[in-house]
Structure formats: structure tokens, C-alpha cells
Length: 428
Ligand code: NIG
Ligand code: FE
Image 1 (tube, rainbow, N blue to C red):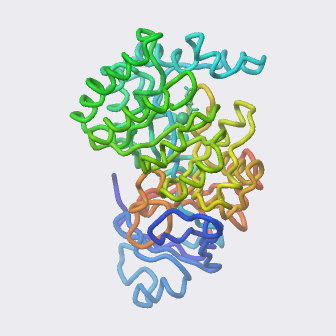
Image 2 (image 1 turned 135 degrees about the vertical axis):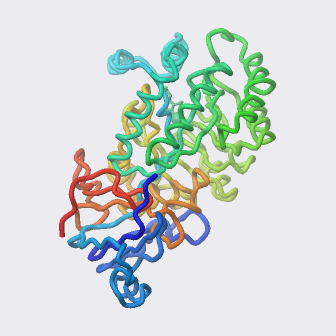
Image 3 (image 1 turned 90 degrees about the horizontal axis):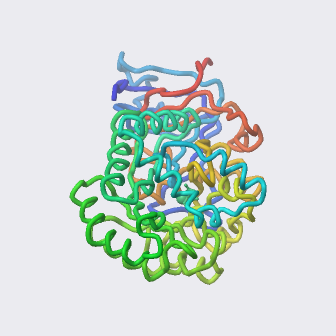
């Protein structure tokens, strides 16, 4: 990617969670660093200094632009500057549409019922198996660029619509290419255990055997995935099957993530705590003692309010999670079935207005905690010297403008590694 040598953003109202080495939990989730008259200086795509403008300019030797002719300087007219969004749970790599199924859901059909009848995830599996790698890439890229325009600079993308070795690897190759050929930073998750494929109907154990003996070793040899995830749910994979799959994933060098207790409390959150997973996601039906166990085990809870919104279900108890000291992250869960949105501002708005998080807690959930939920806090999630220069300029007085200005994200610039990759002209 092209890199500008150096960039100084002046006259910004800078807001960021502070990275002290772990995800922010409890009261700390709602504490942001704020520089009213702030600045950020970055060089070669990395943040050199961020904070009060006077301090940043002093760190540059008192000379704006650091005395180098190659420094671009931008007066941001007092706009808010926040870290780029991190989306730690997406199923962005898919083909086809399930709009007809959405209409069925509006008539009362249940999500898991549709899956049981061979639709849902399995209908997307048919579309992804049938798509060429080029088609799959083109469709996924289009969606990824929409994420970028909505402020996402780093994201996780799962496989899970192949459910056979060849197609799962096809998805993982597309995901790799999205990371290589768009400005987005991408981490891949192997989700071969997303559903039991049609050819193994009634033989979940047989499919688990295939996952453990063939698919996971193949993914390992490809080197294309960093995480292994399982849809641990009634009628999908049991806790025992999930444990076996995730153990095989761990042995193949892939850290665990879980779709846990989304619809029913089957013990997914407890398993995530037992395994010390990187994240436990959904958690709508998780028992409070298991939320406590997650907090004690250092697992990040990923809440997906756009999914519960689209499924018209009660939301996960995010407010309670914060009170229990469980670090909360939020994500789009972008997929063709339960949550078709690429917009982190939309999700952040739901987090504030539906989950009851404060704008500061929600911003932490969408940036630093999200980075921890995908093992990427070394490079992203906060405006900290040494991290990638990924940030967003907002037209608003505080980060609360993201919830206040619903449906039309108040974003005037998105920067990835110091380069403006989306957003209108920024004038002083
Ligand atoms: O996280 N719940 C399982 N997986 C996805 C939905 C995938 C789909 O319906 O295609 C989710 O909501
Ligand atoms: Fe999901």
C-alpha cells in the first residue's frame, strides 16, 4: 500500500480508549482519553504521537511538521478524531442472498427452524460452493469496501459457508486476498463448524471426525487462518463436539473463538471460559455465572446487537456484563441471514440506544475491546504511539454523534495507515 511519509492532524477533538495492556472492563470501559485541542502525528503509517496539540507539536521539536518538507499538515476544524473501528466478528465472505428468508422471518419463521429445513446457513453454503473464486472475491470485496466507508479499518472474517475442505479453503483464500488487496487489515477465522452440511445430515459425529482429521489439518497446512470458531448451539454442535473441534484447532495453532449461547444456554460461554478463548460471541442466553467465568478467564464478550435487532429478539445483557467486569466488544456479525449490515456506526448506535452502554463504553467496545477480541491490539484499537495510524474524523461534538445522527454516519474521513481511504474532503 502507498504510504505518505508523514501527516500532522491539528485542531482535533481527540477521543480514544487508553491501552494499558488488556481489554477495558467495568468502569474503565467508559473512560476515554480526551484532548479538547488535540493533534496526531504519524509517519510511515504508524502513530508517532497523539494527544494535546501543544504536546504533540513539542514532541516534534516545536516545529509543526517536524521540520521536514515531506509532512502534510491538516487543520481539522475541531472535528472529532477517534480510532478506526475494529469489527471482530463478520461472515463477510459469502455469495447469494437470503432476502426471501428475511421476508419469511417477518411472517414468523424462526431462524433455527429455517436452518433445520435445509435453508439458512445451508442455503448460503450452496451459493458459495457454486460460486467461482473470482465471483466470491468480487462480492466480498464490494462489501469490505462498504465496511471501510463506514469507518472499519480492521476486521475479522470467518469462513463457514463451504463446509467441505475445498470450499472452506476457497473462502480462506478470498479472505486472505481481501487483506492483501484492500486497505483493510484482515484476520481470518476457520468456521468449518458453522453447521452440519447436507451430506452429513443426521451424522454430526461423522462431520466432526472430518473436521478434526481432514479439514483442520488442511487449514493448518494452508496457513490461512489464525482462529478456529464453532457455532455451539442446540441442534448445531454440542459442547462436547465444540470442545473436540477447538482442541484440534488449538493443536493446529488456531486460538479459539465461539458462537456461544446465542439462542439457547447450552454451556458455550462456560466452554469459552474453560478454554480461555479469545472471545465468546453472542451470549444472549448465557447464564450470569458463566459471564462471571468469562470475566475471570480474561475472555472478551462480543455482543452483536444488529443480529438481535434483525432477529427481533431481546439483546444480550451488555450493561450487566460491564457491571460484572466482563470487557464488552461489539461487532456487525455481517452475514446474509441474521444481520446484513457492514455499518459499525449502526451497531454503535444500537449499543447506546438499545443495550444501554454510554457512548464512551460503546466506542471502547467498537475499537480497543474489539481489537482484543481478535488478538490485534498490538496494531489497532486506540490512538497510541506505535500502533497503525488508523482513524476516523467525525462531524460532531463528541463520539456520541455516532448514536445521535442515526442512519447517516457523520464520518468525514477514514484513514488507514495514515492514508485517507474513504470520506469527503476535509476542510479547515
Ligand atoms: O453469527 N449464528 C450463526 N452464525 C451467524 C449467522 C450466519 C448465517 O445465518 O448465515 C451468526 O449470526
Ligand atoms: Fe456469527
